[in-house]
Amino acid sequence: MTKAKFVIVPMLLACLIFSCSSTSQDENESGYVRDACSVTRYRDLCVHSLAPFSNTAKRNPIRWARAGVSVTIAESKRVAHYMAVISKNNKRANQTRRRNGIALSDCVECFQDTLDNLHKSLFVLRELSVGEFDSQVEDVTTWVSAALTDEDTCLDGFDEQRGKRVRYIVNRVSNVTCMTSNALALINKLATTGPDCLVND
Image (cartoon, rainbow, N blue to C red; front, side, top):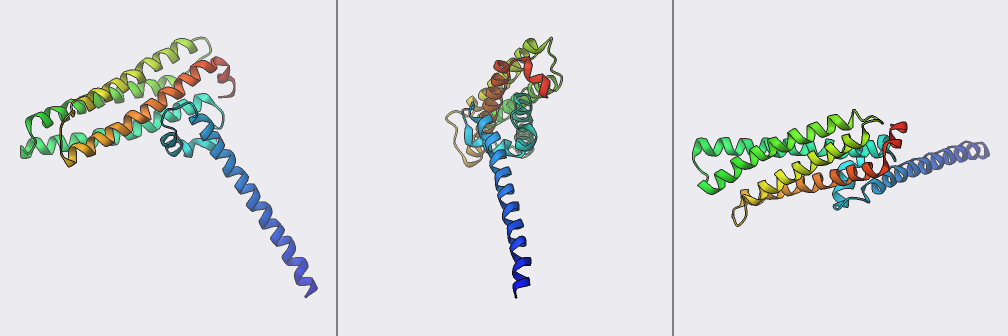
């Protein structure tokens, strides 16, 4: 009986230590993303969408800016694909009212521009250099701002329109605008940090 106790106690101790270290790691990772997202307007969305990057990005503003643009590209692609399919199907079936059809077609074009600007931004964020840091980040800021404008233009086309599908599209596009806004905030944070952050990238 006594022997069994000496076996069980160390095992329990080991489990407790492992549990504490796991909890500590989770808290650290959660802290990283919350700290990064503190500069954004839509913080809950930021934390939710960027949480998977916590372990690799940690306190690196370049990696958080890249992550912000990356997740925005992924969601923009999904929304653009959805709208393109709906637009094509509606044209075939001639089911959409003229105004809705025009708005949807315009949105598809807007999102093509959005994706172009976001892809350019991500490419430059991956190629940052000390000598060109300021001009590179300025370009990225301009492109992501342009992407946000394109998304707002898309939403404007659905003003005062009704219908379940319209609401769904507006909600999805609005979500992308929020993600783009967050990405822009992370880029602005990177700009204030300056090229010194390249040392630890």
